Length: 98
Image (cartoon, rainbow, N blue to C red; front, top):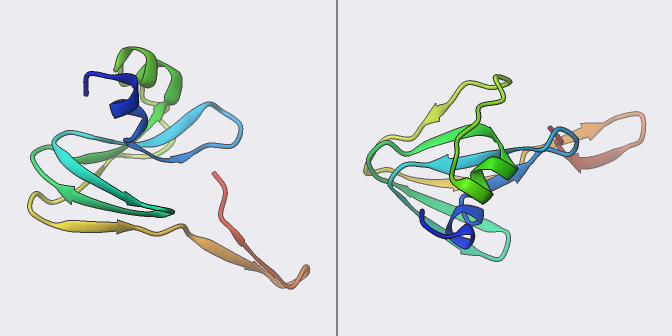
């Protein structure tokens, strides 16, 4: 992860308020096809809840302490799926926000 572009590509989801993101660290291949994201896990591949700015600008991992890390098993392939929820009062389906 040498460039800002490479670090930015590791962001799976952004928090709406606090400046945090769900970011993939470690050795892994990230394949993007439109809104679809596939992760081929290598060594030490982990989804972390980090402050976005220090990670993008410096490659520094500053944990927000809001969520535990999610380790991805080496050799497995994962598909990132946006979680949705149904609001029965509004009769609407929407993306879950963080």
